[in-house]
Image (cartoon, rainbow, N blue to C red; front, side, top):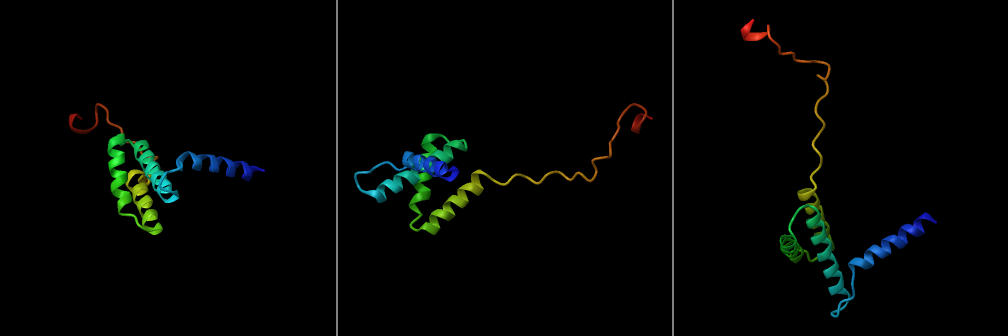
Length: 106
């Protein structure tokens, strides 16, 4: 039962992206992919005009499925880089105390 709901939700979300196009399903899929890239870039802080420009440039170079996957991987690594490594906690128990009576004025 849970997977049917997930499938229905996924289908609804996909239909929001893929709208009918007068030139056929290939044009509809291309427009949906452009819309998805623009939405991703705007969620990462790009302006709408800049996101459209970048999306058009990136998608023009993608002629195969592998190229599109590589484009998404590149976008993900460029705009959503991995989190930095946590700081080294091996010295967590050490405290540096600076107060009058220590150092130069002692």
